[in-house]
Image (cartoon, rainbow, N blue to C red; front, top):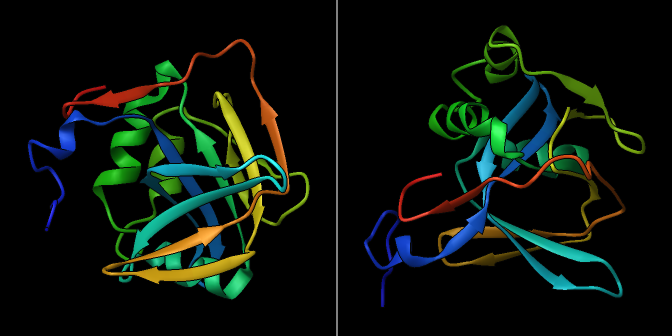
Length: 158
């Protein structure tokens, strides 16, 4: 059975809005994604990305990446990160021009979204191919911004 992107059945799921930040040969990048918490001990979170995403190459080369769960006031940031390709556009600079800020991660060499509801730093633990997506797994450090409520996405709307 296929369940394609934006199929009315897919829109019934509710998810927090996540952004992956990564560092690559073309500099820093950001993209929207969905995530899955798969284990508390050890701390493991999985993200599944299409094979052609610029972020996939960044993650494979650097073996690290950031996960940033958007806060309610970051829907514009999420829309830009999810709408454009990092191989064609410098999304980080475009997002900065709109007034959003980034900070340096604590334990990895990538930027993190400032004021996100949650920032998590990842080292690549495992890569598994499932159909048309690749799953990347691991978490090493997470920081919560307790003042921010997470942004959620359902039925094609924030």
